[in-house]
Length: 474
Ligand SMILES: [Zn+2]
Image 1 (cartoon, rainbow, N blue to C red):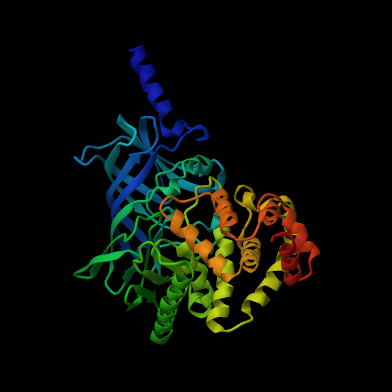
Image 2: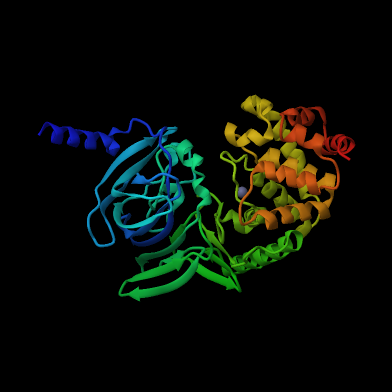
């Protein structure tokens, strides 16, 4: 009897409630398939969801549980195996170990038989509740909710279960973002609403006063976005726009999207798979995000075309194999925004922007001393923003090498590493090898030390800065 009690006590201790912290955990599983059904109640501002998730053990050790995170106001009501047999699970609202402002519903499913390395396992899950955003965490753009005007189901609000722990250091160690998945998701909404997604629309069946939109991914995905509003839909071949702007504005944007893809293709070569592109309008301040075949953006995307160029240029990025990516691709996208404006609409935008950005960079260390001492390659680790420093970095590379070589390098790096991904080190090596000039000095100052900040300080104009690097990198 004592033994039985001890066993029960130990089992309880072993459950989710007993985790003081997840620091010692290893993320062993990834999701490789989602089949989900959502029913949105826009007047009740709630959702009901069910479906099947398949996970795979990508570690070398057997896994005895499945960790999931879900939005804090979404409650799991059932988890069963594919035969309908209930699986034991715990759920609890937890603060992230390394980001206490972020609360998620942490669900841990106990596996009676551990999952062997490489083995997959599918389970049914049902959950329901509310989405009320995450602005309290500092993610101001995550204003997500289910409302009459606009609803959104996306990763940023954990609106679907994500196989991770409430500890981002542990999640990052597993590079979970590299493991892509397929999805098959149906979202049922009151008639009159349209569900927008970057995948393939399979069906859009109407049943009395409801319409169900079923989408599957076009390419292996790392995020899913389903935006729901009274959208109009515009298409031109592979390109699509979901918007509530005027027909004229929407068609103009559609034309611009096609033109931008054609321009970047002429610069960087074809995309590995050109499956089209979907632009989805979201309300102001809901953020802009690019995934493999779609972008979500607010109305400013219709007026400020540089934002559209920015997001489209991300299509030619290589996924990062760094544990903490310095996100240099944001610098590249920012540079390309203004270069493209110049190419599409005449000269002048880039030079003005560079002047402004250099001025901003000079003031960065005052606001955050880390900017004065951090080498650019460590920006990810230090949590620094690489948009403006990265813009100048890429502009210097562009001017040092010339447009032809620059395009060949950006395009060639994409074509070489698209399948596997690459580290920032690999990128530097690739640039050095193909630049046609010796860039050792440039990378010593820009990638491996914070000297570039001093140079920006010392030189009063971009031209002077460029001349300095021209003399040192021939
Ligand atoms: Zn970006």
